[in-house]
Length: 362
Image (cartoon, rainbow, N blue to C red; front, side, top):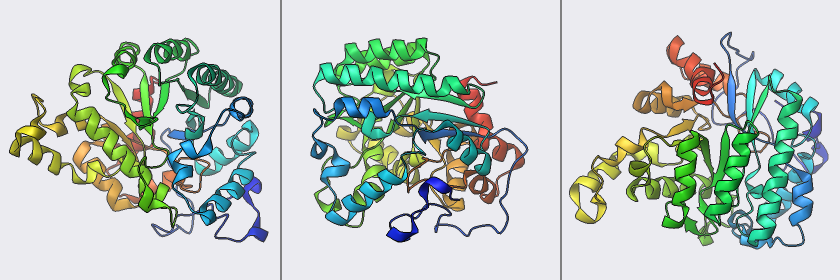
């Protein structure tokens, strides 16, 4: 599916390819559901915050930028120009959501607006600007949108204060990156943040922004294609084996892009836990016990992978997402859910029911 803000054919289809995925056949007629649908993974930008941080931001501090070649950087620059309207305009977003069959959408900052690499005082001000911008966006149509905010996670005390502010605005939670400028989310200094997130029952969406050590990922957009799901995979391993999810059992975490690679190979962590003392990590239960508490979106592109997620983890842990408006977005997420051939109840749950329960929309 395309719309007017992304139609720039003069630059070439390979540069500006937004629409049906090549991972599954495109249906002749769009398939839609009568049950409520929720897109829990989409992005809205706040240009004022981007302008504020521009003098302080070193782009090569961001793994997605650092581990890319000249061709990727050129395409990304063009696509950033393509998305200027899609990232900020309410009328445009409503038109696109209606065409995709999305009744309700949760918007979060683009990962570049989680400012973990900036000096703390700049990051704190920028995070507040982002959150105020998101609040203004969703306030225009609270019947169609809710928000996840951002926090300056490089300082746990500041992150807790901003999380409190986000929840006071009526946000559903916050987005965090898969690492904090190289530090694992499971590091001891971040425990106060996880404690407060659990107290709030806030949804914490874990989103990658390129693989931290991706020297082999410079070509073919591998910084995203491989690096992003690998980052999520590693972050989840650390949150599980560090005992973070054991200490905070009521945390509500959404791991985007289907949770990366871990859900598809989860037996390995249980085997290691049972086979080796250094992998046991003093966990009282097998690692997949904690993995089953994570929510995953359906941005995995193929029906068989979505069926697998539902079969192993249950429809009550799987939610629909798009990653709009990026090129790695699924531009027909409802059709994707339908194409998986799930039961009627599971289809309704994945397409919107699970998210509505998770977000308190019912």
